[in-house]
Length: 101
Image: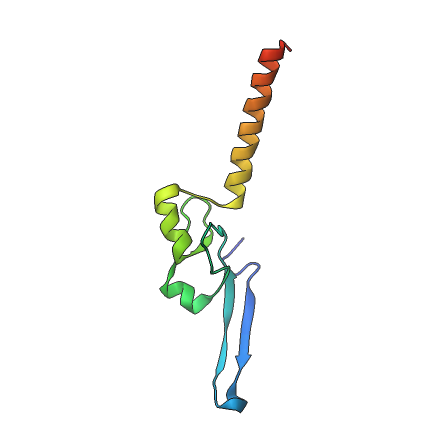
């Protein structure tokens, strides 16, 4: 069974020697990566506060991509490939009609 943690990474930053702090968390990726998306990788704790899911493909999204889905719908790579395949098939059938094949 697939989960949100499939393909996730881990963030580890130990800055304690220079007076900082230890920062570690799971990392997930924004799956749509729409134009203007700057959050390709997000810490899971930050994503829980400012992020969302695409209702069409069920993938985690950054806040910008989540807001775009409300206006433009799913822009995930699988959807784009599916739409491209449909458009290619339609174009081929129209060319076959014109050529009388």
